[in-house]
Image (cartoon, rainbow, N blue to C red):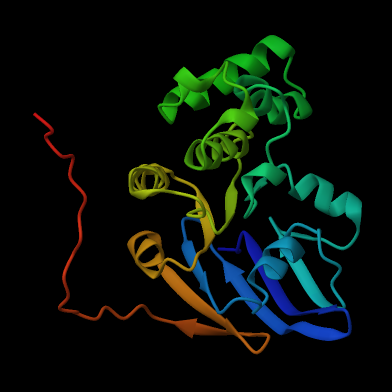
Length: 236
């Protein structure tokens, strides 16, 4: 069976520095790939290269059995690969939640009524329908993260690229996001500094280090330490 994504010998240079050095990566249908690495290792650069947002110096990108070389090739690819950015404010731009989530389906050729129907269906699936009329820049950080994900899912992608999806999430929103992603029948690449989040969701892991990808495995360590919890105070 052919891979959904297949990168061979991909190198990317930024400001004279070789960020990705002959990277090989294969992503098969149904996989949830954890992409780990230190800050500045090039994880975001790799995701951007996959969808043509980062110029590749050398190497080949094959996606859905087609070579991807110029912007036209990647324009088609971006309709099938959903990219959740690190910063939700970079992704949310429409005045209201429903308008933002409906934007992707509109670009796919849906009528306005169909786009709104699709947006409402996705918001309902994520238990976010109560936010549909909210102003996007008035949302909390966790709400923005989930609405940005709804906008990506509204385009019904075959692959998800999730760049630090746990950013700005409190415990409740993190648990909700984890549960949502666990139920999605979508192939994905997950980038996060939250090792527990990656270990919970991923089926395979790779480590990006010194510009190269290496197979990785999650190790669990038992620690003995105190847990601090906050409880409401009864003032009566």
